[in-house]
Amino acid sequence: MKDFEVDILNRFDELIIDEPTNTYTFIGGCNDLDDVKTRVVFSLCRPIGKGLEKKDANRLLVKFNKYFKTNLSRNDMLLMYRELCYQSKLDEFRVFVQRGFPMNELSWNNP
Image (cartoon, rainbow, N blue to C red; front, side):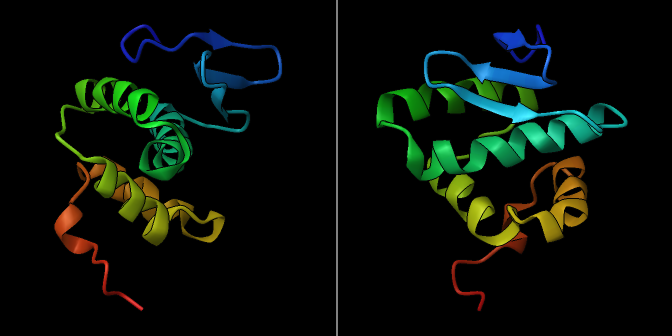
């Protein structure tokens, strides 16, 4: 949590990723750190990609890129949201995160 600069872990198993924007994820039922990372990425794709004001989105994106040692853009986050952020694809998304976000495998043109 310290490495990702998470604000709060509350008694409801919610990881408050960013208190000013009320961006959080539920981590109850996570079995390991990879599960937590997947939930964090899952919960950040939409707000960074399209939900937050540019200033807040960019601030969270900097935090995200620093932690995951990536250089993803807001469009990358939106593409992950569009292609992978579904409960039915959670296992696939976990593997995608573990493999270091191979964005070349995603396409805006996928049906």
